[in-house]
Image 1 (spheres, each protein chain N blue to C red):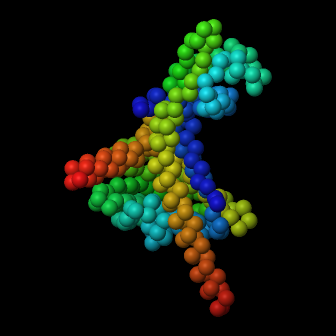
Image 2: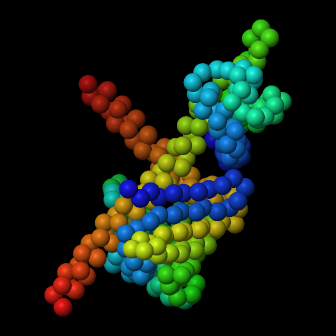
Image 3: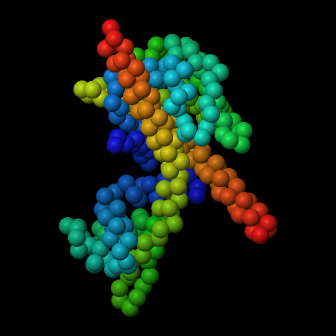
Length: 116
Length: 159
């Protein structure tokens, strides 16, 4: 996935309302009215958020009868997660090892202190 | 269980990494400036780290290499700016697999009681550089995936 696509996904995810919309869509497809319900904002505002999510490829939208349904698209989220995961793992594991080392160094100096 | 938090916000060429340790800040700093200690923790366990040089003082240079089980090498080098103290360790950082894409790293060690918060801010010259750094391991991920595919194919053909 190209960097500019990453930027679109990250910008889309940077907003708490849009994250809440994605969480809701993880349970299943929904109409704009259903998505607007938990928020104190208008349906046009929700529609603008949906447009951002759609541009980032995080959702797709289909017309059914009179309602427009939004669906979660999991693939971009999966790619973003993979993107950071190895970097995160590098530091997670380094810091776990540093934890162990610091504990060992302090145990050594405590022992030295007891004998002094 | 303390957690390592990595923040990479859109539109800003920074990576921020924070973590708390149960140790005084002088000791956490020592683990960053003493190469004999550094090799004991920097990087995943499956990589072997060797230090070519590590002069943790104003104007000192460093270079180290991580080697994986296949013998592939990942070299890193840079320069220290100012003598490292718990208030700040400043160094440039360059992955030799992407020459010219240098970041400036500032590490601070803040003590809260018996604990120390380590905060690293890596600053890149562009968002694209920053994103490439975080994603640079992806090529390895892809290769790992290809290795597994090759093993699978070998097993299928043997069977």
